[in-house]
Structures are given as structure tokens and as C-alpha cells.
Length: 114
Length: 113
Image (tube, rainbow over all chains, first blue to last red):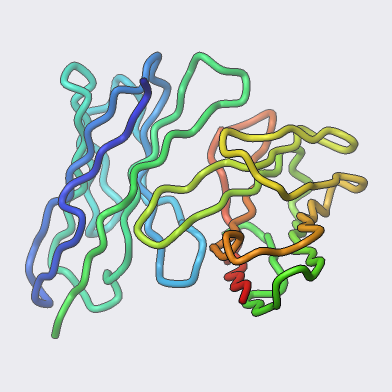
């Protein structure tokens, strides 16, 4: 069964600190993995996309890693800011369907305190 | 950021009422999607469309219906709202011929009393 599991479910950190969010997936065949940021009451916005051959990709203070062998990804946030408070969702695309089927994790709710 | 709009943003309505959630886009993308999301839970695909006059049901069974008469609009209708329909509804678009990235609208928060 294709699944995407994220941990932790929620996380509270102080402003300026770093944190790492985890994503494990069983989706096969794998096409790509995206990390989305979803602010409260808003739609998700894509942060990074990683394909099978990519190990790491950065977008400002966000760095995503992918280990396609173990089917794990992480999102590292450096020098957190109050505006980083949001839900971070891991989304894996299934290469085997014409729809480009997306599998969503439940997200990690990050709260950054001043 | 994609130009995708959803109205209303918030809706509180009584049981039995008919409602239509609007989704519109100015990108001219062929693929459009409706997702349902409950707090702390993953997004579930309830409807999608490949283009005009094309609509399909998604993975999560839903009592809602959709239509795609024009490329720009993909409205979702509930004929008789019930408290179990209380949820956030997200519309998304993607370019059929390019990246499979989906761009999401701001969502509609529906509460049925």
C-alpha cells in the first residue's frame, strides 16, 4: 500500500534554532518528492522537489534530502523564524499512473516561539 | 505563485442547504483538482478534471459533484449539506504538458451546523 508517514506530528522550537522534519514513504514506482508549506487557513505551497537521482536540494533556509534506497526524506530548516510556523507536508508522486497520483503525508505542525 | 482563486473563503451554513464552492484560475491549465482536508489529516482527492467536459471521482468518496464547462472554472456542489461535510476544501491546478506540480488555492473552510 502506498503511504507517506511524517514525524514528528508536531514540533515547537525557539526562534533562531534549527530543526529537521522526517518523511518515510512506500510509494512505488517513485517519480518525485515535494515538501510543501501550508500556513494556517491557506493552501500548500511547494518548497522543494526532488527526483530519484537527487540527494539534496536547498531553497534558502530550507534544505531537503532524499535517500531513494531507504525511501526517506528530511527537511532541515536553518535559523528558524516566526514565519516558519506552519504545517510541512511531504508529498510523493507515483510515476505509474497517468494522473501523476500524489500521496500526501499528514504533515508536521511546526511552531516557532520568540 | 499561481493565480487560483476560491470563494467563499469561509462558509457557515445549516443542514440541508445547497452550496457551491467556486474555484477559478487564470493560468489556462487543463488539470484541476478538489481535495478535502480535515485538521491534522492528509489531503484526500475527491474530484479531478483533465479539461473541459472531463470530470472524474477521486480516491475519497464524496457526495459532492463537480462540473467543468469552462477551462477557468471548476465548481463543487453539495446538494444537501450535512455536518459530516464540515471540512476544508482545497482546489488545485497543474499543467498537463509540463511539471506535475500542483498549485493550490487558498481553500474554503466549510462548517455545516
